[in-house]
Length: 61
Image (cartoon, rainbow, N blue to C red; front, top):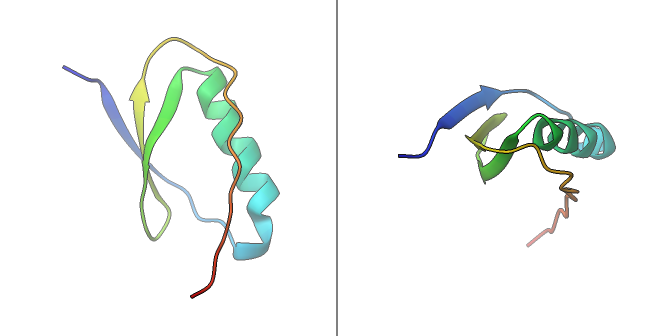
């Protein structure tokens, strides 16, 4: 069974670099993003620490 962890953290749209840094730091601690949600909800799977690099890309309709 997977060890899932939900964290809530709010970022403003212009803080994309700060959010990326936070996600990268979580990965180095062994928490790997599996599902970004709305309203600052993030779902992680706990595993071995890795040096993943996350990038955000916002698209408009």
